[in-house]
Image (cartoon, rainbow, N blue to C red; front, top):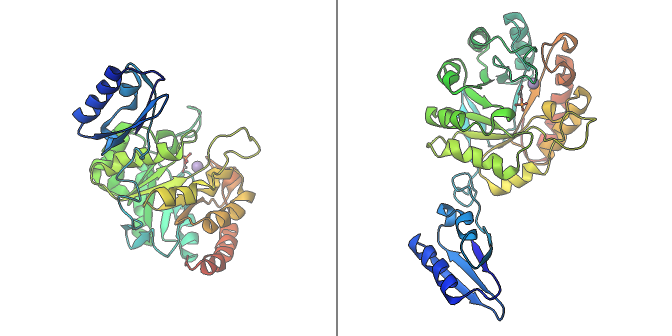
Length: 337
Ligand code: PEP
Ligand code: MN
């Protein structure tokens, strides 16, 4: 942290700041210019609240120089983390494909989609049993019954299951039926939920909030990591901008940026990122070109009848086309899919 003193700050005011830095176990580094004094804080400054210095007399402004997240940072853990579940490794050379319906609607629907995806080499099935819908009148998901359907399809196909958990009290129940717990965009800053999945220790797919910065996403990951749960994957799923043609604006910058800042594997969701099935394929390609470790894609055999997110869901034959085009692209980038 750097503390810039006001022009003409008194010796006593500077000494008070210096004493406070020392009291926190750090060393002050003074640079006395003609007009003002700038104080560098040497040591682990994460414990400091810059606002406390900001409020001291004679202080003009404070600036952080190290990042507020530690466990999520690449400095802390230079190797990319590999999250492993059910034979899948996310964060290695192989790009992980996660696909399935937005919502689990019935056993038949989920099984049909799972079998079509498995035939394309997909080994991780997504599907929501608890749906965070904008309207309370929209389909809210099948709840426990949806989890049981997912567990049954896991049993039949051997696929791993990714499903969303919205309430800390459901974490245990969801974990009994799923391999990966998804924290949705709307819950990225639900700290009770982050603590609960952190304590559980199971793999977590943490989606970026639609109005959250990259730093806020990594701070949410830090909550989970702070419990010793290192199995965190983060997901770019589009953010709100002034553009309304697409449902969200997929922030492709976030992929290489997060990979530089953090060791956590980065997934991309081109379905929610665009809201339009016709855009899913090109954006999936862009994500892979940008270095994503995996994709999460919504698939439905009859999108026009889907109970949620039909407009952004690929039919199984379109998903097959997507896989066909992604394979050579992945290979050209030295990866497989
Ligand atoms: C979903 O994956 O179905 C979902 C609700 O995603 P998000 O939380 O990114 O909106
Ligand atoms: Mn959806």
